[in-house]
Length: 473
Ligand SMILES: Cc1cc2nc3c(=O)[nH]c(=O)nc-3n(C[C@H](O)[C@H](O)[C@H](O)COP(=O)(O)OP(=O)(O)OC[C@H]3O[C@@H](n4cnc5c(N)ncnc54)[C@H](O)[C@@H]3O)c2cc1C
Image (cartoon, rainbow, N blue to C red; front, side, top):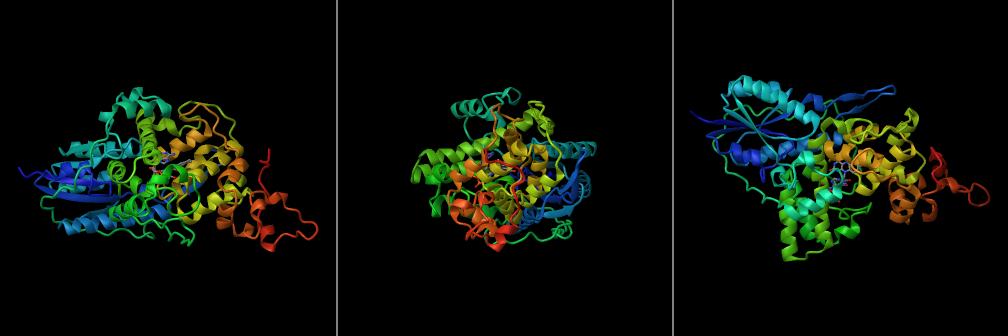
């Protein structure tokens, strides 16, 4: 009997180091498919008394996904293979395609987060009812769960002991090569939906964006080549990673990693090559240390599932969260009157990206200073971020809000952070034009600005709001 494999691409939009593809390629014929799932687009409501609505996938990420699917389609075309693109419920579409094209098995990657799991279960149920097998593979982390020195159910809930055990006792598998593909099934390619068709408008363009992210494996490989090899920036990563401005203070790999255009194992292999050919130091180690943080949250979601989305988090903490829709709107818009926070939110709104330092600042302000339900902040990040990953986003938010993987108080002193990480107020000047004319020492505390004597405020500075709360002490 002819074996016909359907490979269902999800957040693994690459040909290199793609286990599901490698497995599917052993069949006699292959049918690659990508499904735009309408439930991942459009407006959703964050429930509760003071509910708010947000876009499940905002225009920046949707555009990146469209580009990544376009890139995958053209790479497959070069191998004489058609990527079928469909829009609808994945379970229904995959089941119909399986029926129509006499598919014997569907291959895909699996993800630990609840929504992804829910879809997988529905896909599996439908396919199994048709007698089609559904083969799932874990392939989005640095370490494969089978290589972990502990059962996931037993993994530590804090990072350091997890990291130490993994570093001492586990190895990272070598990335898989791009497979050669068997003949493909003849099929109508289907259209990649426009942003409009997904209910979205074009994302804004900002000349000030640190990097213009374009989706796809090739763009991801180009960025890797640029950051690690051409700019030779990896050797300083540990010193620069808390930066706020510019292309190379950090790798900017996250959008490609989270849509699967770059595999963490491939990055690991390149870091190891760099260590052999150029230099091995704390910085080269630290990039892998950060990638292991990402693994940590993936495995934590495998352990705790939807408990991560509870207001009290996995630690079931009771915190007196406040309902303050006006403050929340001002936070979203970058109009809290606290320049360091507002600069971050405006960068996020205008580019779909934010440095790790600025993410921590804006998240801590919402959760620890305003005491607004951290999940609302996480939901807003979900809308805006190009690199959104449910485990990493909600895991980091819970951590900062004190309901996640750390028992320490994670509240940031925003002004202390501002003086330390943006001593000249350059970041504030970049994103808050109203404050650009202020001298550097006044940019983080415009409320201390005197309106008397010769020191009259510039007209635009008066447009900048008064602080929502007093954070000076
Ligand atoms: C509140 C909050 C929400 C976040 N949401 C996301 C998210 O949705 N998606 C996402 O990829 N990252 C998220 N992060 C983590 C981190 O901010 C980004 O991964 C990083 O800023 C991306 O830029 P980079 O690729 O240049 O990172 P680099 O500093 O170059 O790090 C390299 C890689 O390591 C991983 N990494 C770095 N920091 C972390 C971290 N704190 N936790 C887990 N993995 C990390 C990422 O894959 C990153 O691409 C969040 C952090 C915070 C504080």
